Length: 249
Image (cartoon, rainbow, N blue to C red; front, side, top):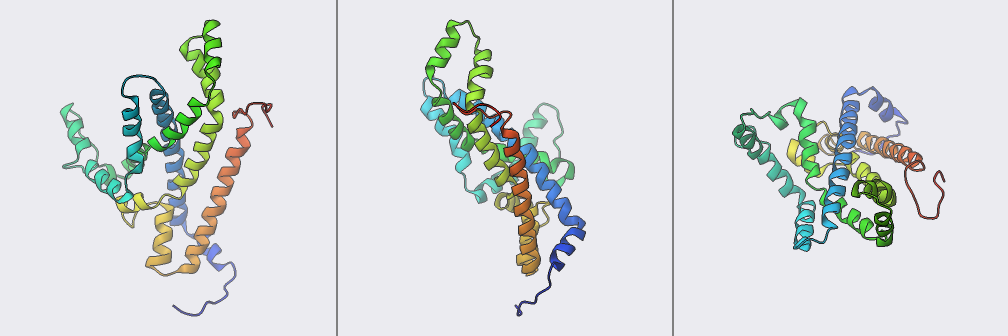
């Protein structure tokens, strides 16, 4: 609301000294580290199921995919009710088997598991991409393996996963980028006090109107994501297989 003033690197020095901001970055990193592999594994399992020829598979594929398209506002509202410690469905189901459910969003120890569970609900998005990767694998590879006496488990480990590695790599990179930038659903679910980096950035820039400091936070997140992504690309040479390209290149 006032003319800009040149302050050099003052915002970055203040950011480095702010322990609360680094705590939110650490929490967001933990959220990405746990939620992305969970969604990847679930998406791959769903894709393997969706790639079968059982009756009604088209309807099942649609049902698996639909949760990933739910509006973030509706998704946050539904999960806020599911996680409610008093009237929520999750604690009610646990009570039926004699388990006292946690406070979920009200307990700092359960906050991260709760958000990971919520994000796994949208694994249908990666399922569709995995399904496309599965259907691009030539059937002749499996037929040759069956003639050689390979079991289903051996074909999964020796054929499916290596040929699916570029698709898994794509989902991993996009998942990490999305998780580190998570905002809408977590903001609606946890409020402005959420230990999420993007929520704190929003508070600084738009609640406190400290646009300069918020911009510095955005640049730090940008470089953090870039470094994270570069490390993933660095490891890709050891486990991602591209047809016709020797491993390690």
